[in-house]
Amino acid sequence: MKQKMVTTERDCKARLVPAGNPTVIPEGEFVNITQELGGNYTVTWRGNMYRIDGTDAGAIGRKAMTLSFDAPEDGNISEQQVWDALETIFDPEIPINLVSLGLIYKVEIDQGTSSVNIDMTLTAPGCGMGPVLVGDVEYRVAMVPHVKNVNVELVFDPAWSRDMMSEEAQLEAGLFF
Image (cartoon, rainbow, N blue to C red):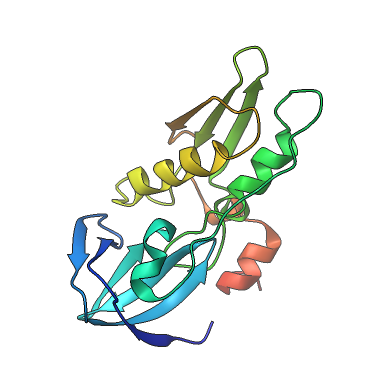
């Protein structure tokens, strides 16, 4: 994506990348959009990188992304729709979704309780963006029809490595030779 400078149209909540510390970018500030994927935004402001949630897209002149799925007629949760929702969540530092990065270890669906249980990891155990990404997973998967509960567990065994990335993700990141 080509970077684009915009002015904040109102105070805008953001999180410092990779620490995850919350901040507010005041109205009228210039920010440079460096990544615009999955409905969330990565910007630079005053020399630092921040992530702006899609729910605050209007603060930088963008429209919030909405996910919509056709509800299965049988009343069950569609595993494919869960995976489709997960593929809309991108790492704030690199333009690759969590599934392609290999960060989603397990998806289990309990049709009886309308629950989705997800084991996921982070590229680094101390990543401050972990709670933000977990929140993204919970929020997006909850948009899948018939899902009433989403439980996400951060696990670090096995430890993530770049070998867990899809070939396409490795190419995108410049790691596949």
